[in-house]
Length: 89
Image 1: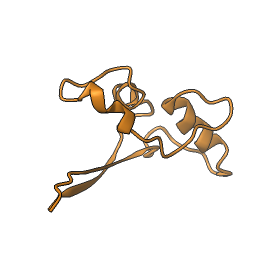
Image 2 (image 1 turned 90 degrees about the vertical axis):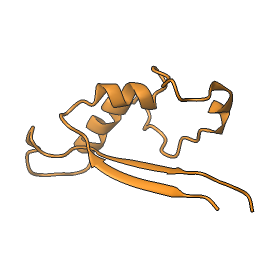
Image 3 (image 1 turned 180 degrees about the vertical axis):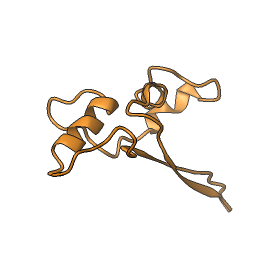
């Protein structure tokens, strides 16, 4: 029997560079198995002309049709992490 975890956290600040580096595989954590990276899936595709997570967040806010001003203290990103283990049987 497997287990799963679903976690939501708001990102601090307008740029979450450390998390972006991790997601974009610029930094590989010690506990990652490099032989299994082919199992990773990219669920959200970048818009045309957008090349990074921070740029994608800014692009989404600019093109969302929001009429009011977005202030610096507002949450711009909610991190969603889903992980699970699979044990046959």
